[in-house]
Image 1: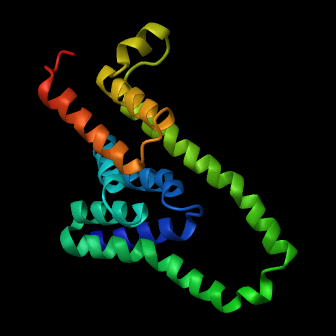
Image 2: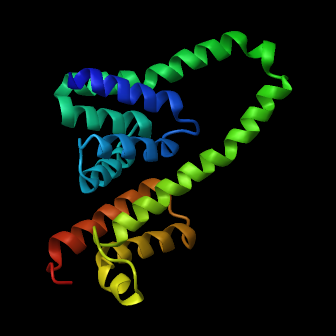
Image 3: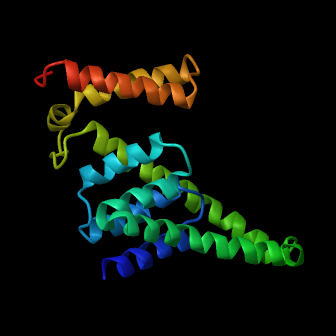
Amino acid sequence: MIYINLFITFFKIGLFTIGGGYAMIPLIQQEVLGNNWLTMTEFVNFLAVAESTPGPFAVNIATFIGMELGGIFGAIVTTTAVVLPSLIIIVLIAKLFTGFQDNKWVKGALYGIRPVVIALIASAVVSLMLKGLFLEGADMTSLQTIVNALQFKELLIFAITGLAYFKFKLHPIQLVLLSGGLGIIFFGLIPTYF
């Protein structure tokens, strides 16, 4: 039964995600956490691994979640399910594109979809940033509790990699390696009370 649920869930995610893998994060988060398949911490860890490995982000995250929940067959099911809607739609569009590429209704719909794609990506960024920089379940009602909830090691890695990206224009691969190295230093070598 888990395989059917995984297929339906990831087919739906693949079908209704417009804007690529990052726009898919809120949908995956809602489905996976809503079904109690993963905790928020596990989900964020899966996102980090999916982003750090080669290949399309959406396929990676679907594969990792499928593997966690249903083994190798679960990974095959989720990967197939998340890719299948795009494959079907792109084949249809390729077949019919010349007939409707200049249609004002199609153009209008595509222009209308752009803002929601931006909003979905922004939502994922804010959600992951709050999860990564603040303690889970912390009370965020006052400045003092927000300061107490800050995870300083994560904030320091965030600041260093942000500076490296914006000031020194490091390549994304270099940023992933830098943040991994900082993680080893801050979480493996420096005592936990810092």
